Amino acid sequence: MPFATRGFSGRRGQADTRVPPGQTMVEKWPVLSAGPTPQVETRDWELTVQDETGTDHRWSWDELHALGVEDITVDIHCVTHWSKLGMAWRGVSLDKILANVRSEHRYVMAHSYGGYTTNLPLEDLLDGKAWIATEAEGEPLDPEHGGPARLLVPHLYFWKSAKWVRGLTMMPDNDPGFWEQYGYHLYGDPWKEQRYR
Amino acid sequence: MPNHLDGNALAGVLSDVFTMDVTAARGRCGSCGRTAPVAEAMVYPDAPGLVARCASCDHVLVVVVTAGERLVLSLAGLDAIDLRV
Ligand SMILES: [Zn+2]
Image (cartoon, rainbow over all chains, first blue to last red; front, side, top):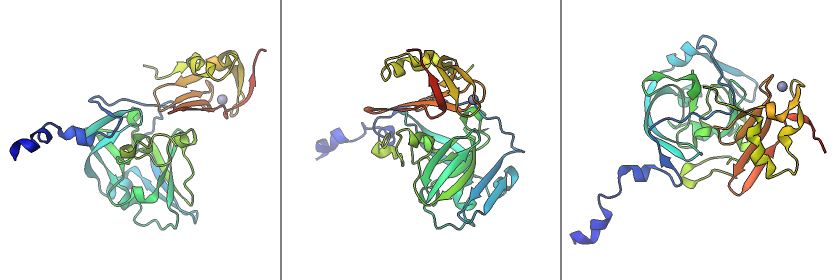
């Protein structure tokens, strides 16, 4: 019965199924900032992962890249209602960074140069779901977009993808980060519209 | 292009909460101790909320988030507010 299905075929573009509820697609990449833009040189940049033993695992810029940089194409969704589809990124998988970090804790606080923080479940950083990103759209990540390196966790609202990331601290409880303290959702799934708590 | 405004950008949302004009009040930064009119703070509006920072040390003084039906206000970065009554 071809005409019974006609109304359901072809009309819904691919974008419809890729844009979560309450979001609008944008072409330009908006800049959101809650403070002055830190200017961090790559020679001074360092990533520190701290576990509950107090052991710090550290990577310089070159050590991070030596773990292996990969190409990533993902859609990003900002809680301020814009989505940017098919963004090309390059970065290092958190699976590689966390491979030798042993922790019993289930949550992570991401810390940034400039003082920003955001909380995430550890499992959301693993299994190919999160990166330390250093390039976007073929260019080194601009400071205003979080360069030299930002967290990239595209399956959650973009405030979780902390700009200017400098550290990850394992934590036993899901303590709120900066925006989460002021009413934003502890998890932030764009497909469930988890904007506020 | 500066990405911040002055503290008068807080006036609208704070007038929903306070009967007095808080932007005219003097606030003391909880970090560096600078005492200045709230209107002189640096307000970053292009974020998931309004963030006002100390003009001397960038410490976060005021955060305002409109979270759906709620308004969440933090003045935790100010250790004193001096209002004309
Ligand atoms: Zn100050």
